[in-house]
Image 1 (cartoon, helix red, strand yellow):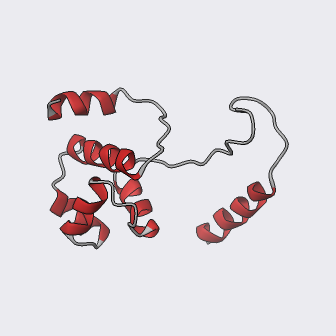
Image 2 (image 1 turned 90 degrees about the vertical axis):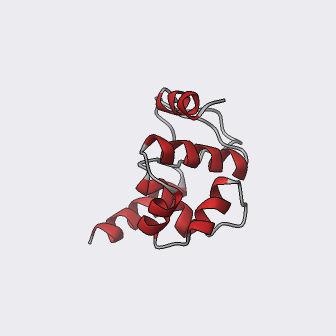
Length: 112
């Protein structure tokens, strides 16, 4: 598959479920290319080495989570977690989870 084809797929992509580090790495690589960034340029934005970006894009499952989150932010990607034990409640009213309150508190703290 060509890089142009890869980029077209990512551009038209809606929400996707990632199950492996390799899938996450592939999405990051495609989005980086879509933004016309080199691995070195992304690494500089993150304060990391190019080798770290190479490892992330190749699916290194031991990548530091803080840097992974910064990479997602730099590429304007968003991560979300879904409780697989609960039915899909997207777009419906649901009972609040105890985690909802924790996240609200964290958001208030980070805005200060």
